[in-house]
Length: 322
Image (cartoon, rainbow, N blue to C red; front, side, top):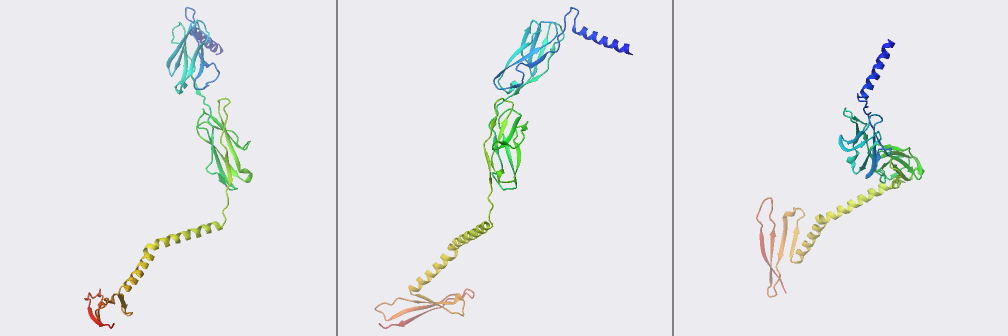
């Protein structure tokens, strides 16, 4: 059994060696490795980057080809096994795609492909905005603070401060969302000025937010609701009085004025207390002329609206001595 295992292992090594070496003594290329020369895949807009494609073994010369999204973008020939260096400029977000390289020599076989690489666009952080649903709070109340940078490559790490003292561990956000912390306003010392800080992988680009102040909300006294209620009642009374003027006060004033005017022009009226208003008797006295010794007056009885009786008019003369 042991002999059979050794025999199989030896046969496998021989097969691999045959695959690497042709009858002419030429060796096929190993799978190339694609690496960023700058050591990182985090890049900035308009940045120049270099990619190295290298096969460790194989018979030269070697032809290296760089692909982006399976589309050929550049080819280099090397007379030996030195790496092929591809220089790129990151001009837009479309340059952030997947990169691969291919190594070929004069031996047929279609060449060998490398691993894939993806660049990450590194963008400076904008100044974060610190906010809260309320700026006033009472002792014993829970409040929240939110910190968000609208621009900057992810992830972004946020830290909250009160004055110059950190009040929270760093909060790393993988999405473009605000970091939120909850505060308990236990005493007056918890009120004051707060800030937050934002940072990402972009070097020397830490930004601090605006200042945010929590103030102590004033407690309302018991007399305030009563004063407000009395004020509203007084206001409603004034409005009601103003609205009643054209409907009640002005018509009453006009009626009194009209009655006074009728009496002064020679018209008088008498009303029987035992009869309704419809049975008023009016007496009209004509002005006396200087040359006459008599004056005419008429007695008119208003029509009874219920019985629809005709009005009776009586004319008389009264002798007047001068």
